[in-house]
Length: 163
Length: 203
Ligand SMILES: Nc1nc2c(ncn2[C@@H]2O[C@H](COP(=O)(O)OP(=O)(O)O)[C@@H](O)[C@H]2O)c(=O)[nH]1
Ligand SMILES: [Mg+2]
Image 1 (cartoon, each protein chain N blue to C red):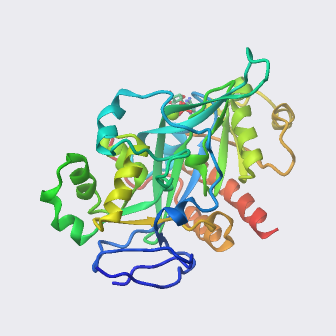
Image 2: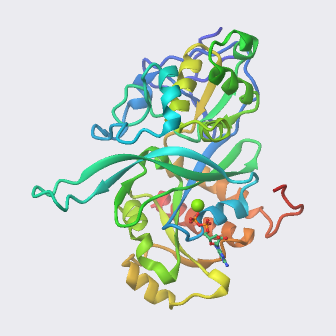
């Protein structure tokens, strides 16, 4: 394991850090408590997350939903050691980088549960999380890159997508 | 491999020596509007994956009608959210989130929308009321947005100036007509939002 240092370059992702950074500058949402409605799918993951939940006034940082998640070598090496299927499933599908939203959709789990589990696995070095840069939405360079990328998309698809 | 660290003092990063494939930088846009206006159709028209659905939480704010103090009542509600993505190049991936929202209630998607490049509010001219909440939200959060009239079957029931007047959006908000089923049309509507976001960022 390496604890590295460096400065985030423009136009790259940055790695998600501990709680202190993730919560800094976020709007306070003290009233935004979870739990008025508990969908049935929450019951088991709630055990798995030891009652912790993301979002609102939770202590768990609200990781952006588009954050990219990748299994580390350590995570892949310890696949067989996970007690919970959900941990194993997350590591397995994150052989390919994907967003928190995709993980939640594919594993059919609530986004806020995935946030907690992914953050746990990150803390254990089994997942690497790359959050978007906080300022990219106001960054003209980023906006121009997205505009150029979109402009290159043709009117219709060359091949019909599988349905 | 040395992991990147943010310049934030005190931030820690622990990362494996070798990591998996380096992911692209994710950026996102929000597709909003009332029920049935064509949000999922819009996402599906341009997404490289079949739109996925996930459960997410939003905070709804119901006006305290029975409440003499008029304190808005906040509730966290679990909603289904559709989304898709477009890999623009190996280092840049655009996510499109179709935000759910109930009409007649204010709602807050902060948790989903934080950091979005911009928003596209889809409007069905037969049911203009359904998009007020989305317009209000983007205005209050100061997220660059455009209004796109979904021309169901090529028909727009109202003059665009009438739509602008009815929605009470300022002249600075771009207003366009598009077809949610056409990839090129969706691309162009997203470009309207992004050009507006760029102009705003450069002010
Ligand atoms: N004819 C026509 N139908 C459309 C168009 N856009 C959406 N629809 C249909 O309208 C319905 C609602 O669209 P959907 O994308 O699910 O709306 P959402 O609730 O905003 O996600 C679906 O049956 C779509 O096939 C359009 O431009 N023309
Ligand atoms: Mg939909």
